[in-house]
Length: 123
Image (cartoon, rainbow, N blue to C red; front, side, top):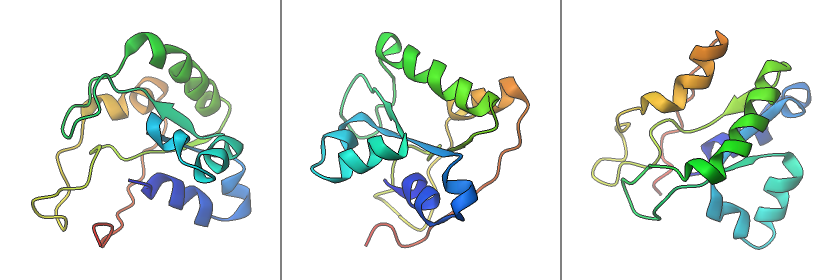
C-alpha cells in the first residue's frame, strides 16, 4: 500500500521536502524502490507478523523509528500514512476501520489531521 509514498511524491516540491511516509518494513527490501524510500527519508513500520490483519508492532524495533517520526513532526514535518493498514480485499471500494494508534502522534502533538483517499488501488 503505497498511497502515503505517492502523496509525498506527487505533492508540491515545498511539501515533498517536509514529507515522510510510514510504510511496512519489507518495502525497504524492494530493489530500487527500497533505495528511493530511504533517500526520501521514509520510515519503516516493524510489524511482529507479516500476516493480513495483524498490525501489532515490534515495540523495541519501532521505538527509534517513532522517536525520529516525532522529531520530524515536532519540527514542522508532514507525515503521510495509511491508518487502515491494508487494502480491503473483500470490497476495495470501502475503507477498512481506522486504527486508533495511527493517530496517536497527531493527538499527542495537537497537529491537524487531513484525509486523502485513492480509489482504484486494488487494480
